[in-house]
Length: 293
Image (cartoon, rainbow, N blue to C red; front, side):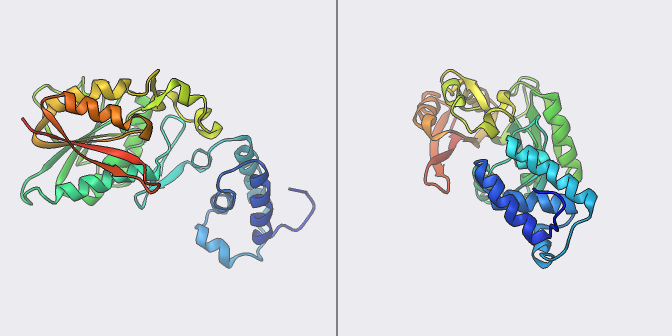
């Protein structure tokens, strides 16, 4: 970004889009808009009515720094400290995965299935590996009849989740607990839904992830082990033992391990594979099983 020139909002967006494109950003125009809106402390849509305005020097300097860090690989969500998920804004940090549209299919599935429950009964949900709390908070916001126990092994992740629970005013219905899977949950506590976006990337796959994911997002939340199924293999029997009869297990998975996960579910006599939900690319993304006995 050459100094000593007049940089209007419109020119900043065009230059930054071209610059980030040369640095292999997947969505250079969107990145430019998000970073500039953050620097100017306005909404993205407001940029389009301010094309001829010239930002103040200190805001321009802040924007330059963000663009430099984005070009070096830092994800936009970590730069601005937030990401939208299911029409809600969530605080994020390098302690948690950045919420993604694919995970919204877990929320959608639960909301659809919850319609089958009697309206006068509280729905108990457990979110295993909550991270930022995106699934737990979204369900609490859109399903007033539910209460959610959100688990994570990471204290740092739970701190991020706690901020999101508070900012979305669902503290009365979302409980946070540090736990390795459900190990810290009282043995007699059962649920109507157990949901999870667990680590499901294999060690070999991890090496081929985009650098913005591989080098910046928490490996513990991404990589399960050599096969990619290690965490899910442990979660399935544990979840089966904590679901009420007729309860639902929903897990986001990689399309590459989908068939293996279905086999694991079928091997547990307490569970029955119910359906697989495909993402917007038509790939199997969310596995649904039901506790039958």
